[in-house]
Length: 275
Image (tube, rainbow, N blue to C red; front, side):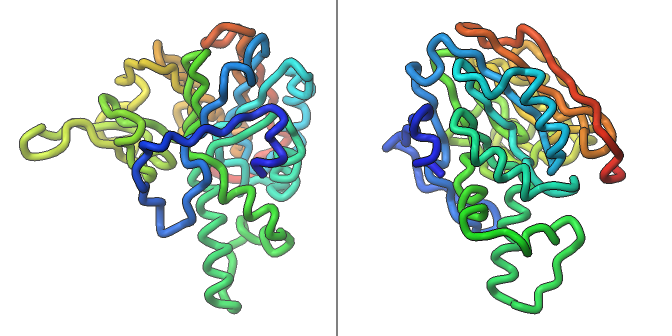
């Protein structure tokens, strides 16, 4: 996968990155945190696309509307490329084929990796409907999902991509991998009896983490379709529930800016999954 993207993407692994603990014993992506060098994005547009969830036809329309296949454009996905929608395999291979694209790892991408592992351990393992598509998948598609990083940082544009969220007040290397793929809210615990701000996958405990985020990076994320498009000073949420009959949303950033110059939406062609 990295070789496929090497023409436009430089993956930098900080030697000071500690050994991270992946969710559920899944393989650690290599690199776990990706950095896009300045020469990769210099003078280029950046198109950041929300949760696709197998909505292949809507993704194709989005790529056309945003001119995402242009040579002067870098495309970044906020994760959850797969599951729930009708064409997960097709989405994976479309994103793999795009030499100017990369995605972070989402909780549904991880769920698929767990199902691959379960099938290896038990040949009689029964897949739920939303995972049936992996029976037709090959190792290259699995490897692609395995190596989706937890974050993508673009230092020259001061932006960071993560699937679910980041705990306010913590440096990137202090973040838990589970929070990065599942959190929606943050709640405060006493510094003496707890650890200050903590992440939670619940949307009912605490506050939307993005409302508390004060930088330094502007964070683009997905995962939280219930809240739809989220616009905060230092964070933008792009999951607008395409798979639930909503729409697929992209933020388009012109060269040398870190906030969207426009949002582009594509309406879902169907309600593929009930909330």
